[in-house]
Length: 211
Image (cartoon, rainbow, N blue to C red; front, side):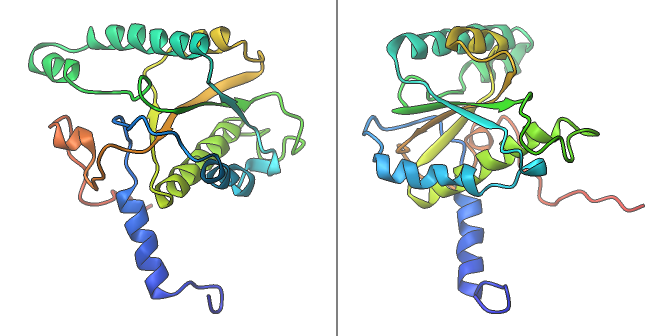
């Protein structure tokens, strides 16, 4: 690194890393090396947060009872979501694999502590949602660090967040931001699975308006 800028080779590798990051739903059953996982979890310690509040709270979902509750939650939410589609769209939705919760060896529920006093409210008094954005940004860093290790991550959003919090016995001041499935992906692909399935197409350009 020179004058604060990384080399062209590094920038190209970083662009590759971003391109090859995928929302993984299909995992091998191989266990995840704990040292590798610990390295990746430093993404939270190094992540920016509003007012340096570090509002992320991680819960590793390991017990059969906790995993069963989370999976039941997904199934119920997914069944309800299917009712919102009709015809070919419903058929396509029903055929999508939308979670790796059955297979992923590591599962994390990531919460935002909305009541944290750390940071003394700096930047969150006018926009309290910045705490959740901080957690989401840290999750994105984790995603990239996992991919750099060859690991995959899936972000499950088809859930009843309040029910999951109740099932896991979560503090009343915490709000779910992400349920993450982590493990070794069955395959590696730089094309989103939803795009391959015909659900949606990725935009070719970033829309920018000027004022």
